[in-house]
Amino acid sequence: MTSAVTPYTTRLLTSDTWDDFAALVEANNGVWGGCWCIGFHPEGISKDSTVAGNREAKLAHVHNGTIHQVLVYNDGRCVGWCQYGPPAEVATIKNPTAYEKGLAELPDWRIGCLFTGSGSRRKGVARAGVAAVLAAIAHAGGGLVEAYPEQVAGRDPQRGAYLHTGPESLFEEFGFVRDRRIAKWRWVMRLRISALLRRRKTAQALAQARGLKSVRPRSPRLVRLTLVPAAGSP
Image (tube, rainbow, N blue to C red; front, side, top):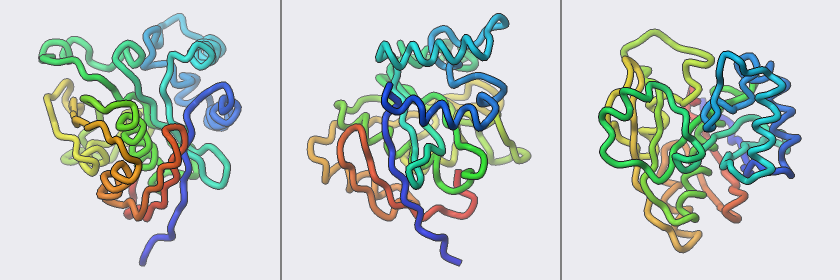
């Protein structure tokens, strides 16, 4: 059976879209108990962190412009996101000792947290977010992009926070390759993005990703996607 075509739009998390982001977080118990997607920021999560404090810290990053985060919308409602940014912004990653031990070159960009709200999972929301992030990076001049997904092959099915950096298979669809292992099931994966000077060239490059029927970037801040989600897609 062919999956129904699902149109998604994306916008950056800014003061203008904060309410959409906050509504999604609040509808999902603060995201993993109150993280508010602050874990990858420089301050991260500590034993003294509070839900209210995490929310205020996230909002401060939005107001200060120290954040890059794509929100994914379906029918005008925010249903997920993909966080990214330079290492100074996405500074707190899992397994830092193992990461630094094998580090030869810092990336220009990191992809941090991926989240899809309850009721919208396994419908291609994460794929839409990653596609929009790569488009934004291309518009910004490209560079070396890192992600830190979980290996899903060869292990029991995982759910929830275990996949907050996405499954390895999702990034493989976009051409990311393994660089090195930093935990039993976690890998550093890398992709070098060229600067794409014409929007048509950007659309053609991203349309090659599996599951994308068409990609029509409107601007670096808004990308309209028409997806045909693969069965069980993130």
